[in-house]
Amino acid sequence: MNRDQIEGGFRNLKGRGRTALGAVAGRARPQVEGAYEQVAGVAQAAYGRTRERAEDLYEDGYRLADEAASRGRHLRDEAVERGRHLHDEARTRGRHLHDEAHRRGRALAVRTEENRGTTLALVAATAFGLGWLLSRRR
Image 1 (tube, helix red, strand yellow):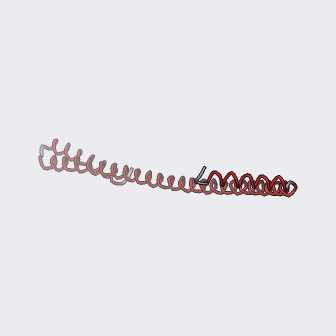
Image 2: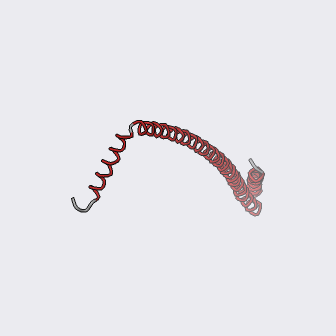
């Protein structure tokens, strides 16, 4: 409850009292002034309630904005961590594939060296086949 709500409530009560006294005394002026005070008091109390609600909404909005920013930072940090994990995994797999290709290339080079005649025949047959496929006259 804020100051406007309290003052508006007192002003309303004061206006009711003036209206009642004016009615008892049979005088119109205190009744009109009392009615005015009542209306002004109700309006001031309504303003106080509205202002309090606006302040609550402002605080809720501020809290929600804070929470959204916090969640955004959390998601960003989570994405960065996930990116680092994927980078490390890709790097590990790349090293593994590089090592495997290197090992198989060495094994092929050793076999080629051991079987020179067979290798020469395979290279010649492959060259002949490619030449035949790419020639215009078949």
